[in-house]
Image (cartoon, rainbow, N blue to C red; front, top):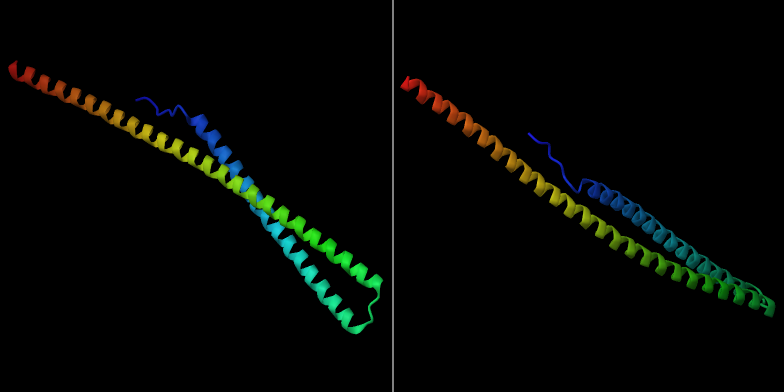
Length: 153
């Protein structure tokens, strides 16, 4: 009885490795996206806290032009940072989507190869069963022929 050999086994192994790499890339992209969102929230919080501090200073003290200029520059700089962070979030989201598409592509490829492998294995089992049945039929025919020969003698 011959052993089952799947011709595309190496390709299947390579596809599984590629799928694992895609899973790792996806996990890293998700982690990066979450990190960028956390940084954005942190910057938003810093801006809100600074605005509250600025309002308290305005209520308590007399304000001079230098102080207004310093806070104005600080708020402009903080808003610029927030805009940069929004761009980083969009970039991370785009990367995450690309990784997802890549992962789904590799997942589909592995799944199809596994289905082909299962189909070929089922065909192999059917062939082996047919071969076994043929051998059993031949043995049965030989026994029957011997019986007939024995009865004639």
